[in-house]
Length: 114
Length: 115
Image (cartoon, rainbow over all chains, first blue to last red; front, side, top):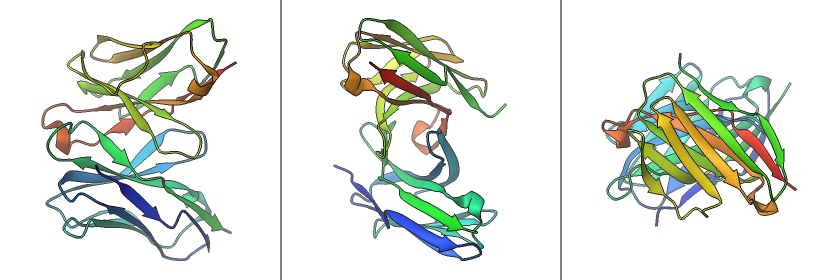
């Protein structure tokens, strides 16, 4: 059974800092990994999708890496801003079987202080 | 148009009521999903529709009844719910060809409270 773990559970940083969020998964047989952002009481916003054959993806100040063999992904946020405050979720899509399904981590609650 | 819309935003219902949640997308996606999210927990998959046919039911109780009337619309009919069904209900969509490789796009959710 695929399990996804996100560390840390919560992170508070001052504005302007670069930061790294971590995601690990137990089964390396995945199609892809997707990072989401969720504001309180809101839906999920897709940030980056990394296919299993890729090593990283970049969008603006965000950079996500994937090391499938070790079961790890990181989300790097450069020059953090108060507007980045949200919960960040990673989710993996397993290969084989029910590949419709995303398995989510519990998220990292990020607070960026002005 | 790259968004998924959901109505209503908030819903309060009694245990004997019948209500429906609605989801709509105009991205041409032929896979649509319902997720349930409890507070401070990750989303949990409930149903998947592919080409307007139910593909996945994650052992969801029959008091939740999904419907996909056309390729743009997804409904979730609710009847005789329990207070523990109170949650944020999220709809998502994706392309269906090579589904495993495709990004899922989520709507803003419906906050459901069952009294």
